[in-house]
Each structure stands twice: as C-alpha cells, then as structure tokens.
Image 1 (cartoon, one colour):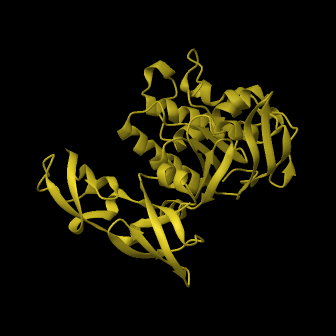
Image 2: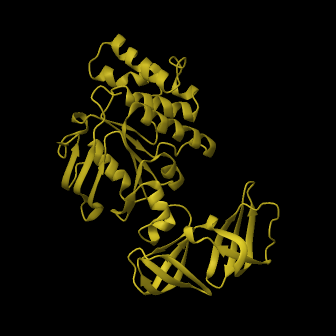
Image 3: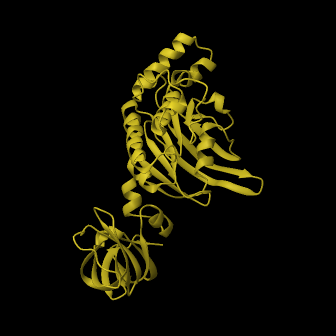
Length: 348
C-alpha cells in the first residue's frame, strides 16, 4: 500500500475555459479513496482536461479541487501527490528500464542506490523483473506500458492517473493489460482516475464511470447502472450499443409505463417519464429470434461466437446480436424477432 495511503478526489463546480472555449463546465464529482473511476466520452468532451486538472497540469478557471480533503486548486503539478501515465508512455529512449523507473526519485534528490531499489520493487510488481537493463526500443508495447506504470507507482502517489493508457496496444493485448491495471489497483488499494473513449474498457475496469458530453457530466454511476438504466439517449448509445426507437407512453401507474412500440404493447419502468412520445433503448443482445416482430434481414455477419444482423422492422432498422450461430440468416430473409423487456429502457 502507498506510504501516504490513497486519497479521495473531489471536484466542486469546476470549469475550465480557454478564451471563449469552454472545455469543462460546472463539473462536480467525488472519487473515493481506493476507487477506480473512469472518465468516459467522445473526443472533445472534456475528459482529458478534467484529468489534467487533477494532475495540476491545467489550473481550473472556476471551482474547487480537493485531494484527500486538501484544497489543491491553485497548486502546481509538482506540489500534488499525484502521478500520471500518459497515452504515449513518455519513456526516455536513451535510458534503460531501470533508469526510467528510477527517474522520479532521482529527480527528487534521492541517492542512486535508494532510487534504484524503489524502482526494482515496482518493476517486479508489474512483472518486469529481469528487464532492468533493456531499453524501451527493445520492449513490446505492453512491456513499455508496464514500465510507464512502474515509473508512476515508484513515488507511491496518493492518486494515480491514466490517460488513454491502452490506445497504442492491439485488441488482445488491451484486454490483458487492462486486467493487469485493475488487479494492481485493487491489490495496492490505489485511487485511480482513468480516461478512455472505449466503453468496453470502461465497463471492464471501473468501480464507477463518469460519462461526459459537451464539457458536462451526462451521467455517473456503476457500470451496471449506466448500462441498464441510462439517463438519456446519449448515454444509452455510448455505453454499449443501443437501438434507439420512438415509442408512445399511453399511461403511467405505480412507476410502470404502458408503452406502444410499433405493433407491440409493453410494460416498462417509467423512469420518471410521463404519457406521450418517448424513446426506448433496446440492447442488441436483448433481441432474439422468435415470434413477435416481423423483419427482413438487410445484413448479416458471422463472428465466431455470435451473429450480427441489421434487420428492417416496423419500428425501424434494428442491430441484433444473436448467439444462435448454427444458421446464418441470408440477406433478404424474412425473420421474426422477440424483445426481452429487461433489455429495454425508456430514455429521454
């Protein structure tokens, strides 16, 4: 466990402006000590600027930032007990793995032997024992990533920040390294703020997710909360694939809505909506082959353990993921679809 212990991070009505451009607007959230929270959203939504404000690489235009209950809003990066793993890893090519990992304590004035002892401990922790004398160019992308993590951990920061840490890795390695980061965070009880635009990555590693859109927070909650109960159509579409279709709410009683979805009549949680037009987010894996909704296959693709289809129906084109892989429906084929109500959410 870090010597100083993990610390909470709190944003209170924080904004960041660059001239007339608002990068982050009135954002409030808390990352509890020992928690991994992901800032998720499309490019330009404000997530990286938010991360840089935690690090002290950007100073907030308005609001207050606290780390471990201490106001750090005006403190520089050097005066915050925070380490950051950059997207590019930012390793020094002329330094060995050991020299890279020992760089932080060396700069802070520790003796070489002490700095290297601290670095060796963290390199072993991330599975790089025996790689100390190699140079970055002699490492794979995943190994370079681990050196960057070891270097960030060596000073035992109160908060560890990751900025798109897996974007340079191939898909298979991304899955492996994200699991390693998660296991390390849990075993060391680290407070982590993690930025990505990859919703699958966010669902896999996070205790909680903060979804950002247009410089604001669209919704925050656990991965399950965001996936199963999205606050609006943006979140529904961004957290996992969703078919957004127009529906009519005929009545609401006891928190349940009577909903017309084309020719179908469903009872769904009202989620604060009132009678009238609304939208429903239908998850692709919640649509199965069976009696219900007539459709025509427009496209179909075999992906090993599942089939993906675009199906034209009376409620619009639906993206369908089917585990029934024994028979691939031909394009133009007539099929019937059944909707699992637990995979449909009414949204604004």
